[in-house]
Image 1 (tube, helix red, strand yellow):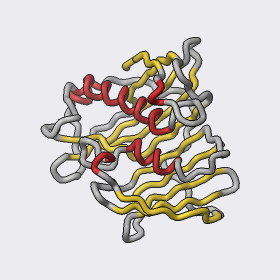
Image 2 (spheres, one colour):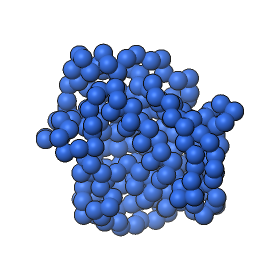
Image 3 (cartoon, one colour):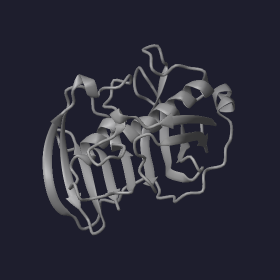
Image 4 (cartoon, helix red, strand yellow):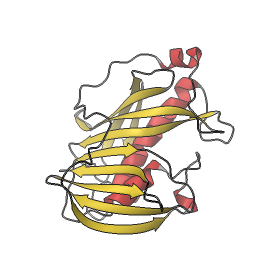
Length: 236
């Protein structure tokens, strides 16, 4: 388990005076990454890393959006880890130790050289430890697309070098930025569902298709051959 104090800065605050979705995801990813480096005794942000941890699904429930100068405590820990994949809770507390943001995610281990599944060693699994999962809503690991939708928009975006992370993929936070920018300004979401299927790479063309259901907006990431790479759902 890792606990870290964070103070929200001006660079993280958007037009509505609260933390931007992209900066919230970056905050969570930074703390999760620090803990992963620590427990497996490896530095993933390097070209020498043997394997990577790829995000497959994340659910985020925002009970209160952080604002400028909020002092937060971010707590992260893994649970139900197997040799090939694992879950992780990341919970953000305010100064009164009230949970204002709850998250769980699923990640798989892949080889850096060929993107095939990587088997975690017994030693690494032992170093990760065992933690009980946090008591929060469990929404599964798939977003249902077999529903009635109203088509809202289609947008093309090209992945730029500044969007690429050290795994040579489109960084997870930019998916959130691209998707949240498709939402109407008056839509205030508090639940985010993220399903990643295939990564985008530098200079790939993304077709963002935004649809509206009875209680949410769904943004689907297609490649230039209409293959789904990711699905995002935003709910009030």
